[in-house]
Length: 430
Image (cartoon, rainbow, N blue to C red; front, side, top):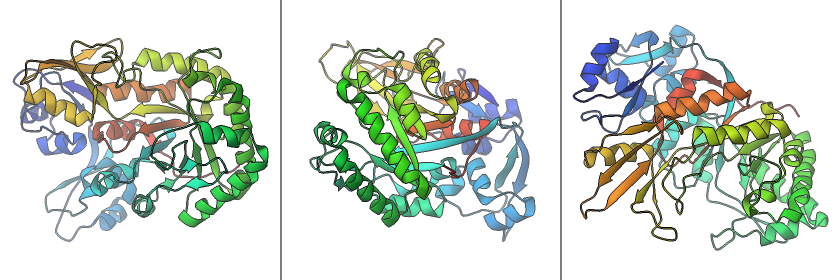
């Protein structure tokens, strides 16, 4: 694997000649939004194929998989263009295998709203163990607010990606409120009803477990929250259903702030089968310009997390988005605009910006001036930043990672993931 940084005057053709790879192949691997006009500083993933198949008339994915004894989902992972458009064309090159040796198997999860475009969803699903449609809400009587996720569940089933029932504190009005969840956490007599409601939804829609995500919990309820998670795990595991719990990105047990104080790493880590740590949003909508997930900040969270939770139970959060700030930044001023990573590249192209890479945060960024004369600062993620983050799974011995959220395309990341790791299929033995 090589990460190539575009220099002035370079094109996909010249880069292909440098690595003895076709421009079409490089475009397939990266799914670049700007293949005809690269941006100086743009990072491009170079993967070297070990085995290539040239499509002949009559070939299908099934026949190719039989010919090379390779599962169809491996072909989909190695060729991201095939999931959204599985039609094969004569003389098209299909990657059977890459030269890179994979490190180990990992669990992956991805969060998405119900309106994700179907072609985008199909491209991502081969790289996921789980998918978590966002989100079930909870009422103070332990009843649940069901999301609109039927189409997502149907598509996921076709790709054998297993769905998790994501439960948060969203209300019927679409906002988040901890009040109802607080009542449930503090009323153990409601826990049986909550379990029964969860079990009904799991069996009705084919979920394989739950991903529980209560945020801004009162510090006095931290142990009640862990006790509720443990209760649900004890009830659901005998049915073969897994329980994952989300945690804010803490660096110490006594970290101050409402986001952090209600999440007890040791207690929740013991209560759940897996803990998903939300290692992102250092750069956020209302904050000053900076990387969304600076690598040193992520490492500080993981350094603490593995002292409280067995690393093989930890899923590391990965952002699939960036932010565009209008300068000068003023606290309480206009919020930054959330953008996808390919959109960041197109913005740099549109305004003639040169992309920089910050070595400390391991994140790309750039500045530009818009049509109104306003200066902008953009931080986002790319293949190089993805490689830095995904290597932490091996470094810390983690179970895997989870993506927030799938509605923002990030094809380079999934190809880096596929190059480093095998994606585990769901298999749970409580």
